[in-house]
Length: 416
Ligand code: TYD
Image (cartoon, rainbow, N blue to C red; front, side, top):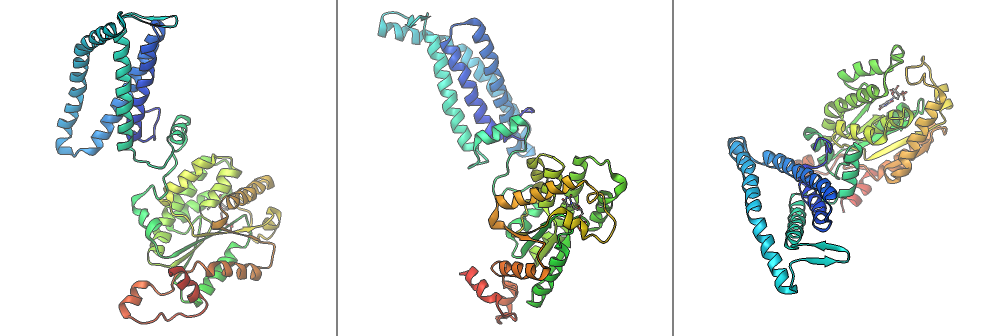
């Protein structure tokens, strides 16, 4: 179980029981001591795995008061069963041999060149394997805690040491699940390389949305919280040129976790529109693609940090890196000082992400004038905007929302 790490213990139990049956079938059919010895070890290992997984499952299910007794019962029960099997199996084997003799005239069976003397013992092993397959499959179905997720993918990820894919709706941190699942606000992320004009667009959108009556929170990564400010200073200081890619990824994730917990989550819960300058995709593009960390690791880290909170819309301002870096008015920070190939990879990373999920992205050519870009973003946002007055206050007062204008038709469309 240490080898399979994050693989679901509830799935492992059934899988191990069925896996123990496979060598058992071969043991029953191949009369070769060397092969049988080897396969007995494999069966034993699988049975041991099932046992450990079973204990882990039972340990989680019972409360502290009865745990000792329950675990003692499960420790003793297999031993009693083992003695019973040892006591009964020879008689069963003998009885089956007699049955074969009654049917065929001899207790020995020949299949091609292979002879099975007293074939009842082989039959006992086959029956045991059949019982293990049936019970293992049933246990798997009953215990499965990841329905809909292919077992093969989970096993492959566990064996390779990759993170196990999260189920849709499954998130890492309990306190953030609410923000991720039940919020009524709108979450917009602006992404892009250096100097793409994200800050300008965030400002223009905030002005427009506030005019329409929305509660708008503009924020950014890294550094939107007190903790984040300190992380930002660590991350962008050119004195830290040798920082390891993993340390960098962890610090961006830490900043993001704090950002979601302190700023984004609460704002969305009170139905605000949140516009963030950079979010998860920056880590995927910078630390994943450009620094060469494994995409699934960076994705998992961010999912864990954010409790699975994903933007409703990500606006990618795409710009050739040289143009963006040329727009800079201050001296270069640690990431801006990276060579131009690094920034080329960042750009390719962002475009790749947008290509994979086109419905959640708006990709804009950031060399165009800022006002044009703002107009295009507004067009796209109109369809997504929630009702500007919280539903609760509407119900409380019974009055019509104070906000009118071009947002309303879109809202009623969404509702219907
Ligand atoms: P910042 O200077 O705030 O943005 P901009 O350069 O667009 O004004 O961003 C700080 C740097 O951090 C920027 O070079 C991108 C980088 N970054 C990452 O590498 N990973 C991340 O997850 C985030 C959020 C930013």
